[in-house]
Length: 364
Image 1 (cartoon, rainbow, N blue to C red):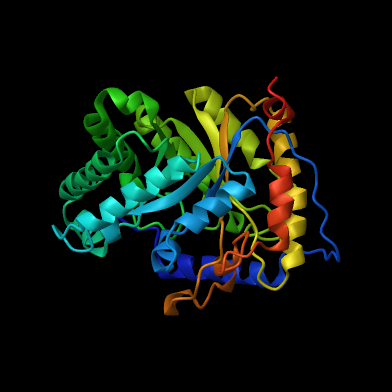
Image 2 (image 1 turned 135 degrees about the vertical axis):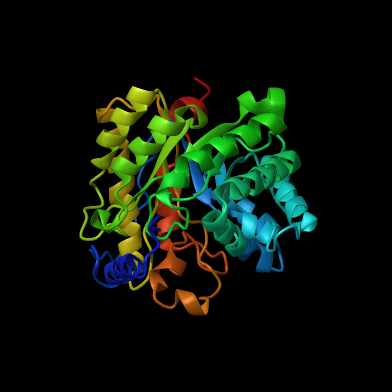
């Protein structure tokens, strides 16, 4: 069994990400104009960083208020297994309660929630290598505990994160079982409320496919675990983290559409965005070019009714780099606002683009 998280592949992926942040697509602007609303028929989500909110003296309320001001109707954030159970059988009930309070606060702001079941503890990955069945039992227990705390207040549960990425610690042969077990735990815990909750997987498209070929990985899990999956959410950063790409190139959606139709699944963009590292104007230009192009691609492919949501990564810059993040300065500047929650120029661009559709605004 060979893990995808190898030193060589990981190092190459890291290098490409950094190179892109330094030398990627760019075109400067002196002024920022707010474009008209796209009138897109899907919901817009934005990712919140739970560590960022937990470290903030003000907590999560300012983040939720800023997401509402942006015009998002959904927020996405991690439900970290590593934080909930950092050591085997060492449960942090207060963390589960914090997640529950965050979900209820989001609902008070009129925001639906995409909960990301992710961040596998080191002890769990070690157990997977020794005893896959034992790992799956532990995974089931974690997912069930989260669902018990949050009930059906979460609209979408994302089962893991970028399962095809070279940085994902779950070997590919175990992906389908991870999805099946999470689906089973949600069903067992939510009972009759299960129909109100949708499951999501998010293959990653980037680094020119280096070690992260999403197409065969997606086919594999759909053939083995289609019944556990409701939404196929592609993580894609054209012209941003996709090396030498065009921010208006959303062509991978045509392949994703084929899977969605073949397996009768909904679609989503699980993550997309652009860092401000080196050039805030580049970030504004990216959103101004990329989001309208996305809307055109979806309409041209006839996918409007299948598109569940588009999630922007992320709301606010992170407060600091950990020592192991020094190789990715772009990663902490993906926010639409800075680390103090002050909107960047791109915030107003996005706010204009994702505004309510006219028929919603005037009641028709």
